[in-house]
Image 1 (tube, one colour):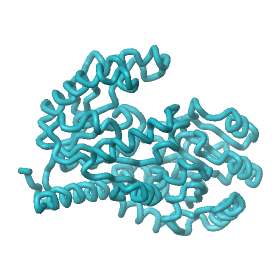
Image 2: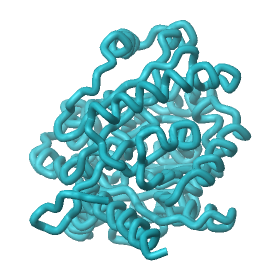
Image 3: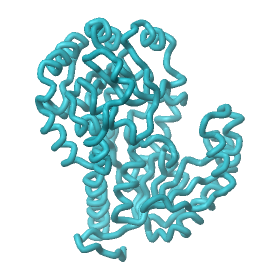
Image 4: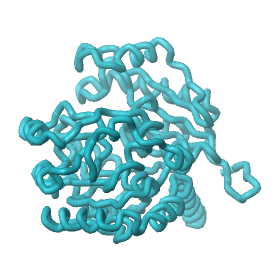
Length: 401
């Protein structure tokens, strides 16, 4: 592949990302990786297909008007250093019987967008749709991105578990290179016969200054300390029995949850969250607001239940917790065991988790500098470089063969 080279020796490539969430949605790994890649490469971020029937199928939501406007303006948008394209599918491509009708339109749109973005033999990163979208952009390498246990996310996504497993297998079969983000998922894929590369999440270094200058949120001022907090989606991955135990053990303090409550959250979990007056749901915040809510915690929590999903997930929030500085205590997510104290204190049981929080509160400054240094040594720019190196090695090996 002919490629322009920068002064640091990095070869400029084209990347096309078939992302799992729209560019204008809350930040997810695909957003961070796209941003990091775009600092050195030409990047096209392709949103999941949008259907004009979505408001009818899912009801009118806060972002429905904006998304419907996108249908009327199907341009390749320049957003910072990268380009974004939102294709339209009619009828919805999620329905297997309708896919044959939608695919020709979808493929034509993406091929057009790839030409408009001037992609040359791009590297394809696919969180979704790899078999259906392969070859249309003239890609040189197809990279399948498998982040979570496929079937385990069925209840969280409202999808069929068997169909999710089928889609993950189809991605692996069609990919030249498979990447995942947690050691347990890396091992599971190998057990299933899929060789893969581990590329963890990272810290968004562009937010370092925001964390450093973030003032205490006004909601915190009226809450009694210690302040134990969690940021992120509030769904059935969390261990709500543990949450209730923490509320009782630290009844003189406060538990805060900063994030959106899943519409699929079980009724039992909703009741447990409402069972104690010192549990506070502060709602979702914008990306630039979140650093303040983490930085000013006394302990940052990742109180996950031990489920099939959490055993294989890699919590992205850990990296932002690390730079924010407060002690981190987690449970349930096996990947957290790879980051021992002073990075993360991992509780194997509810009782051990409570004891670790008490220990953290006794010396909240312990390990702060180590956590921050570790975050800065593992940024999304580092992950983009690791991925780019894997692509280079694959191309070199293929050329030698």
